[in-house]
Structure formats: structure tokens, C-alpha cells
Length: 369
Figure (cartoon, rainbow, N blue to C red):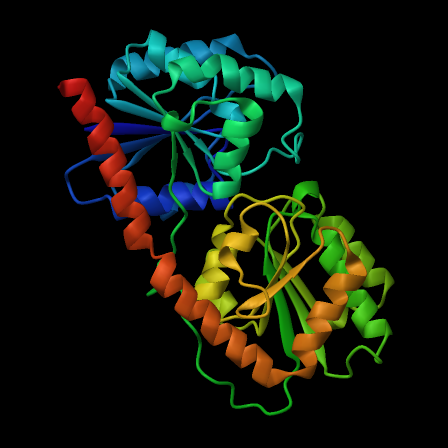
């Protein structure tokens, strides 16, 4: 069985990391996989296990029909049994796959598009309703997305399957206790510096904490890993506030498990989310987590048990939640332990990989039978 995974761009990101986890988890010889990037694939491709081919089609902005022709020819040459597209940016590739004779087409919904953060864009909903005829199964990473596809978009419920993201609890695990008794508490995040991820809200909340010692007089540092169009704006805000000496924004990195183990509190300030891989990774690393109460975040965080949910875009609320953890190290330990336990029992990568294995085998079995 050959499964061709089609993504818009194969680069650092939660969706792409999930694709890598699925492919590497299924690297047992029973299935073969390939990745097709409509635009480009970066050095991120190195995270795949050996032997997985990655194809870049160089699609230009807009409707680049030559790129779709290249996709058609590639699919005719590869002859995959299954094509698995992700998010609205690649859904039209299901039509190309149909025309190329690919027998099974799966479409995954992993979160909200930056141009449609609330799922209200009529054009995008119309596209999904029309193109669902070319898709055998929709996969959503959160129940929130499943309900939206059924209730708002109008996709038949029988066509939708919910498979939550999973995390490697051996690779992502708590670090050892620090030998220092007076080290600053590290407020951390791993995110894409784009509008929908709202990284500037965390920057502004951190600035508020530093400028208002009444909230918390506990020394703290900010560590934000990731890159994107708002990265320089974040650096500028911290520079203007005179806080670069207690901040680190190193861009994208490959050593995320090690970086998470240097953090004491994890913050995800997204305006909209499906199921966040980085939030799961932080939980597996034994961190208390703060996230906006949107999308699938409430499926991961039990409020005041393993973390705190705050209103999207609310800087004051976010600053207060961080301050509570800064003031209370026992609370950080208790919620961090609960995060780890929750991931191990409910969100293991083994369960996710097995669910995808069964999905691929089930749909191919229907084709064969």
C-alpha cells in the first residue's frame, strides 16, 4: 500500500509534525508513504525516517494550473492507493487524485485557516461541500472540528472520523529538577509567528508582568521558539520595552524536546486551534499549560487541573494566569504532573498511529472487496 500525503508546504508546523509522526510511526514495512508539497519542502523533511520520498511541485500563488498538471502526472507515475490531503489549501487535490485514478481519497482537517479563523468564510464552506463528493473520509483532529463540519458545512456525519493527535511520550518527557534555587522561572512557547497564533499577545502579557511587580515579583524569562512574519514585531516590542535581556526568540529549532525541558510554564496564545501538537508535547514534558479557550484546547486542558484556559486575545487575563503560576511553584508542579498523566493515558502517539493504520486498511479493504 502506498499512501501519498499532500500538504501545502512541508515546513515546521503542527500539521506537518503530525504528518511526520504518522509516517514514522507506520514505518514497519506494511505501508509505504510519500509526501507531496504543493509549494516547497524545507530541511524539515529530514525528520522523516529514511526512504520516504518528498516531492515539491513549486506551486505559485493563486490557481497555478501547471502545478496541478505536475501533480496529476506525479500521481499517475506513483500510482498511490490512497491520497491524504490536509486542510482547505490542498482539498482541490482530491479532484486531481480522482482524475489520476487514485482509488481512495482522504481529507484531514487539522485546524483553522489564517484567512478563515472562525470557519465562517462562505467560499471555503462551499468548496468543502462541493469537493466532499471526491473524498471518501474526512478526518478531524478535534471534536470541535467534527461538529463544525457536520453542523455548519453540511458534511454527512457518517463520512467523518475523529482521530486526535498523539505525542511520543518517550521523546517528550519531563526534565530533571534544577539545581538552582533562585533561577528565573521560564515562561515558554513553541508557536508559528503568524496572526492566527497571536504571539504578540504573549509578548504584551510578559511586558505587563515585568512592568507591574504587583502581579508577581518572581523573576521570570520569556522563551518563544518559532518563526514567521510577526517574529520581528515581537523582537521589536521586547526591545522597546527594554526586555531583550530577559527574553529569547531564537527562531525555529530542531531540539524542541530539550527546549521544552528548560521551560517551567507553557503558553499557547492561538486565536483558533484544532488540536495543538505543541500543546500535547508541552503536556508530555510535564509542564503546566495556559491556552486560549478555543477549538480543541478544552479537549486537552482540564481547567485548574492540568492548566488554565483564558479568553482569546485577552492580554490582562493571560498575564494574570502566568502570574498565578509564577507565585505558586507547588501549583506548577501539581498541574505539570497532571498534564503528563493526561497525555500518557489519553493522547499517546501509539493510539494515534494505530487509528490511522486501521483507517487506511479499512478504506483500502473496501476498495479491494
